Length: 114
Length: 109
Image 1: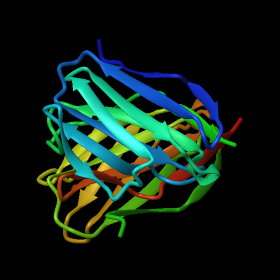
Image 2: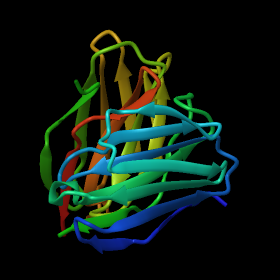
Image 3: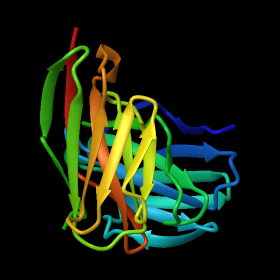
């Protein structure tokens, strides 16, 4: 199984809502990542988990809250978002953090904040 | 600041032609990777070239790496309409994968 699965594929939420994005992989990877991507831009790193511990938080606002319940799952909890947070949110995994291997990406969750 | 920079930002070619995209980076690397992204989808890994390699092939893809110039190129030969996508180079900077701004390739039938 070489897949990273993200749900939901699309999410529309108001600025007062609380929602979560989910990501799952069963490749035994120990590093998992959240990226944010705006249209016609490259993915920008948000968070990195390594061995289920938060390794990197790229100064992301607290309205985004990551969680890694176990080595296969990664969540991104969303609360009180702003319209400018609308973007494609990509989850990725790799064998180890920033090792010499590749990143495996999910298909993304398209978020629209009204 | 970004670790990688690609050029051109956008490229339109006819089916059957070759497409060349370039990437420059700023610091020393262990490897450089190229990814492809179809519109609104996730990124897919294409090829990885290590710092001690100068050229690598995979099917219709050819990647070169010049560490003295801190640059890499991706050549897609005999392009097809299905190659239409955005292509990103990526390097490891600190402990993170960092992506260049990407090249949007359009292959016209």
